[in-house]
Amino acid sequence: MAEVVPLCQADMNRLLKVVRIEATQKEVVSKLKDLNIRRGSKIKVFQLSKNSPLMLAVGDARVAIDYKLSYAIFVCNQ
Figure: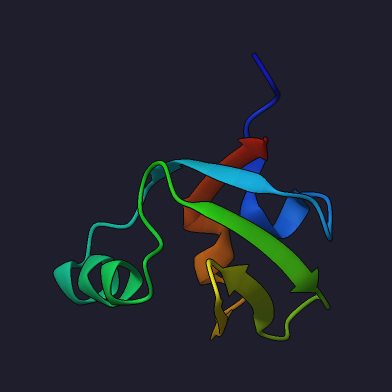
């Protein structure tokens, strides 16, 4: 199985699969679901700068998430 890492440590411009989300606040989990970021989702990081929002491709959508939140999203290379 591929190595599981926090989203902020994943390779850029590679297709990634969300393995788990370690957020406990209901609002955060709900917001991620609204962005279609949930276990099993396929995403790609196309902009990553420390302490800046991560820019992601989620399906046909482009979304930004907080850098700190990216530590709660665990992914592996697809």
